[in-house]
Image 1 (cartoon, rainbow, N blue to C red):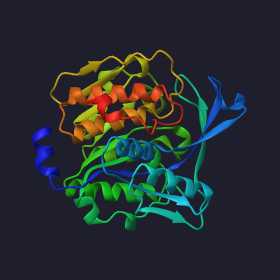
Image 2 (cartoon, rainbow, N blue to C red):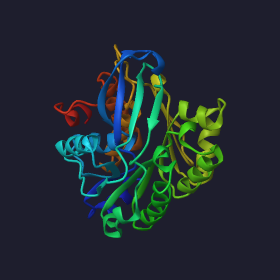
Image 3 (cartoon, one colour):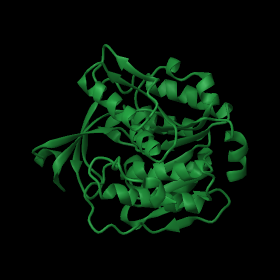
Length: 318
């Protein structure tokens, strides 16, 4: 993994191109209750690719955010927050016709409940991602959420193919949720198309239960994605830790870092994957990538909404 990455990425200055949803999360103030019992909410910047972009910037990387927001107060807030941590927003578009997407999320020690109100986030067009940008990119990252609606779906699949041709490593968080897709078959078809490009895959047990509608042995999950063309599959297991499978190699299994008091699980998976991609870009062995990922996830579990801005994350991880 590492030798090829050095050779390919030595002249690339965009560490991670995060393509997909950026939105406003309204996270419930009451802990461990569903949305129907949540009385009030606090506002945070959200969206899995946006979280990865912000976390990466805090880690000292150079991420670009590709998405669309509304020409409204929430859109202004998103630009402000991304710019504060030095995420490149030159290709973040403002829509005159669609308001910024928002999601209401329950606060939970497990997988949170959510209600999406999507408007601008999926209006991503091919002119936002140039070939010259892809030539400068190390990792092209997206999500199942982003791929669930057009025109973003068509744009991302086309640009991911171009990115691979230009020497980018692809990445995807398979954060499947039934309510976002017109059908499960469409989701499977899109996932298969993207996975044929050999991305780094991040999945969770909850995602797989939603996608396959039954508990599958972990080996079956790994085989499913390997057979689609993905060499590296990372399966997060919540408080049980993580397993990583690479074709032809022994499965790596690591325990989660113990957190005394979990205050918010929202974004923990994004924090995990940010840490993994950060270490991957830094040419670390895959086991070290997982260790960094687990440390960043543990840090997120102790903070509501997002990772703190004023913490020297880098020194705590490496």
